[in-house]
Image (tube, rainbow, N blue to C red; front, side, top):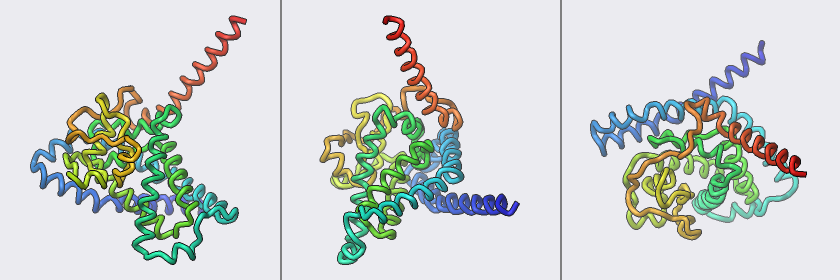
Length: 286
């Protein structure tokens, strides 16, 4: 009984921490939308309500079930890296640099790692889980919370493990996570901003919107979250103008939050059935 009460208390605290952390961003993004669009912002918000509901359900499931698993997994991984002596740089070496430099390196390295991890998510193996994030046809800042649990696990484990290998201090890892999280929410807003010349340095909302297009030239581009220099360096940069084309995915990947949660498993079942059928066909020809 005490264990159940403790779990409920911890879960409740986790929900409060997670959702209260969205209050200020929500107010800021709502105020920004109203300033830019006026009353039109309310109509846009109403049309996006069904998608926002899915986003918040998936976020709540993430807080309740995935975050605790990640804490355990990342603690184990961090301990393993430290015990095996796999860190490339020591805490003493990082201490020689100015605090601002360590923080910048953490964010820059974090975005570089995430760029390649994001490209990996667009390969056939990981796409079925990542497609859930892309399925939002009314992209809003809450789309930045829309991730399948499998996608969340791979994202956190890949990004944090590679940063831990650099031996960065904990505070720098936290700074990287906070910047990438909140800036990631911002670039999912429906804004026409390209940043002009600064768009060649930082990812703009327009740039990231082109990453979410459904049917147009340029799909499968703009993988970075903070620094657009990575997309330019590896020839995946595409911002011809403010994005004005349909968003989402071509496939019907399930209705509602529960249908989308099932989608990667549906794909896996189809792959398995196809492999079995091909094997049977080969055997019948022998």
